[in-house]
Length: 165
Image 1 (cartoon, one colour):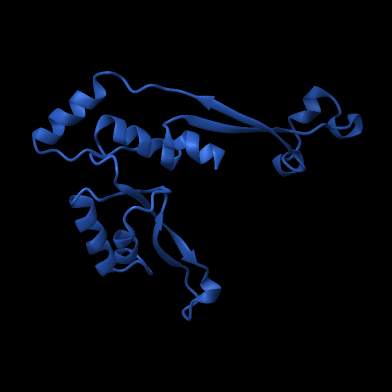
Image 2: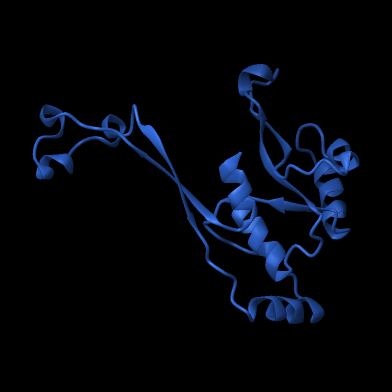
């Protein structure tokens, strides 16, 4: 919950954890480089979050606005976490409606639950806002041509924003 709050505010969030290693486990600093990642990254103690701000450049929003006025559709491709990316997209005007609910396409059931044995995917809400339950109803259920058409109409109306990872 704490990390989601900071990501939603546009901050980059890194979780910090540690564990002490016994001398026989660690060996020399040179032998540390040869340890398997899985053997090192277990039984960690959470130490906190590292928060980083990376303010949007002053000319980003006007440029996005000019591109939109000239008929261009702008998309953002980033390695940021989805909530951080959505916050930045709102700041620069790619997501024009600040109240638009955020959804991503994600697995909604495992293959074992489906008669076909295939994983089912659907729209999953990212944002905590519960103001518009109608959109949740329209996007409920497994992904289909119809649900994609409904999602497209909601995006065009500015009611929702879709985040892909």
